Image (cartoon, rainbow, N blue to C red; front, side, top):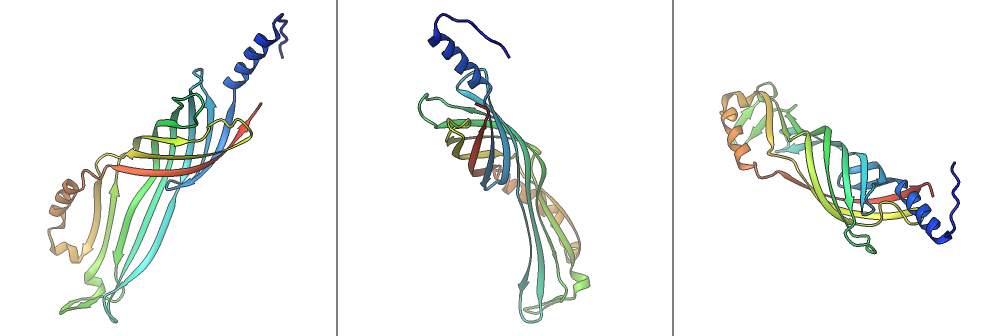
Length: 223
């Protein structure tokens, strides 16, 4: 603890409040297209710029059946995971407005978009007869970069003036060009599926952007 003597109380008060501002931090929870999130924010030496570090978790798994007819059912197991750790900078261009710009980078430590297909009944459809063993199994996964930059904008104070603040943000990740990873045996062994994958990748190479929208509640720590 330090004590200061100052003949001008106004100057001392200004210096003290500036020092407190520079050491303010907040914690926040978020909910949005990125899933559930937790983050820590801190002021920087530049009063219009703030730093953030955090993580989000999103997982969706579903098993559903496609009934071709009363005798034929295809099983599809889908899986989506979007788990990240991110570092971001938040810039407030206007002094009295909570509008801000966002830029950062994420590490997708567990990111998965995949589907697994098989059948227990086999297929009997429009003259095509394939038993379950001959149909086999098909596994398809779409993969993007592990490190992805993002930009966006939002409204709300990253360090609340009071204890709580509510924020909203919209932005977009640059994911890189998607890659298709497939494994199969059975019915696709008799096709040219391996030759089609590079063609599909070329057709979807521009699907490199992933938008997001998140809503947050922040709590200020300290004075």
